[in-house]
Image 1 (cartoon, rainbow, N blue to C red):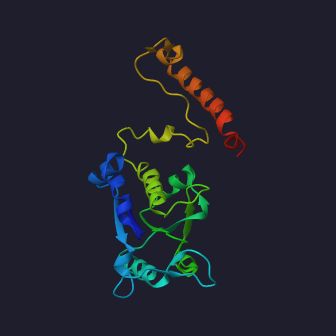
Image 2 (image 1 turned 90 degrees about the vertical axis):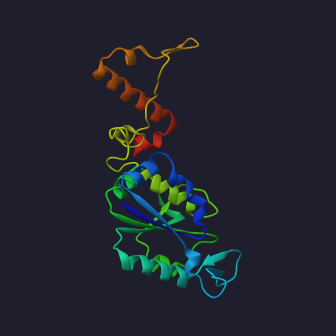
Image 3 (image 1 turned 90 degrees about the horizontal axis):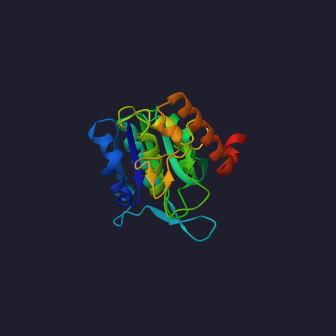
Length: 225
């Protein structure tokens, strides 16, 4: 998989891709992430990428010309399965979307900034708009890193134990059950006996019951869906 991320401030998200699971995916040749500075395609001697919005109002808007130029340049090199714009008014990101995107080959992500990007770019190029929650960030960079992380970790060969991702929260529509590790007795608090029993069918039954209980307590809306 290849992910190209367009940003006014790509330095904001260099570190997430240089450590842990994402770095492992890169070293294994399973996924590659390329950060592109929109200012390289800016206008004039000051590489302008934003301007005041028509109709007045506070906040700047990322202009059509630089965005169109960089998108066209990337599209000339390869086809993209999705061109994603990270925006608060997009579709709320969830595990189902992450699963779907993990089956793609090439993704492009556009990070909004200031008041966002010119609507004409959204209309002409963008195939999917994603929000990571009902709140506003200073830009789409952190959201792009979140989406990339959620997608890349699902790719075969990235995790040491590929079954791990299949038991994550939301994969089966439920939150994950409680987990324990050594010691079996920590200051008088003991690991549930069932987990030490070696009876794996019963353990899975216990985990499912606890997942249902936790979901009912914390996210009953998931059960409604």
